[in-house]
Length: 385
Ligand SMILES: *Cc1c(COP(=O)(O)O)cnc(C)c1O
Image (tube, rainbow, N blue to C red):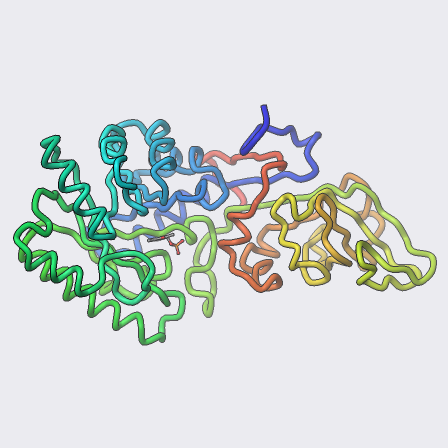
């Protein structure tokens, strides 16, 4: 078997990726407690649960009591329905491409409708097929990515046919700057969303509201409304980067040392000869490269740990290999077959991202498919304890 998430034995693999499902469910409980009473804590499992494996992650979260799951694509929703069975809500955030309404309905998925065309197509489908399947309506409040504009939204409200035939579960919007609490857009978006929701409720009194991703949850109860949509924080990323991370670490990536060499004169390392190794420097090469999603921008910049000792990347990252300067590590720890911590409690995905000039989200969603993947079960305390 090959392809995404193919099982690879730890002996054969160059690196082992350990995903702590107990830490994910614990993070979900932590977020649930942080939410105001009555607010539903869902789980965003789009992009294969941020690279960690949507089937395993969603099953663990459903076991912990999570009832609402969010994906981006219809295909992700269809796959997830097979894993979760009929019970939990699955919300497809990109909505429905015209013509696929019956697919969405058949799998019991809840589409987010973001454009007048999507709304019209769903209305027509729901009326023709006499279907009461719920939907979410998305309004834009300042992200300018998806959702009805303010004008489109009020046109729909004022037109008696605008939302005719729909069964809206909730009104949705998305925050642009929630990771920066002092950013003025947070309050502006909150005000716009509050206004839109109360107008919407004049037509649909039972409609709920959903505004917050992970970071939005930490802005305060005013941003919570009825459904929260955390993703990144479940997977251990820091929802408020300026303060200490309250989430448990979830991911550990360990790479095997293939070869160690001691340089016996001044030499260079890797493609392009960009790293100067001084006489006596000790180098370790491991079996991870950019084909495994290890960002090439970490060349000469990334850090890792060997036996708890910080080490730095030396030279340009190759497709399948990268080299560390391990001169500061005693020979007792530095031997072929030893495992280097690429991602762990130190460095975290957020640490690596900051060295690479990106965000932890990209580090996780880039995680490759040649790693041996191990899942620590949800019922057993794991890495974080
Ligand atoms: C990805 C996404 C989320 C989850 O965001 P996190 O920052 O990962 O918590 C929530 N809502 C929407 C619309 C998204 O696209």
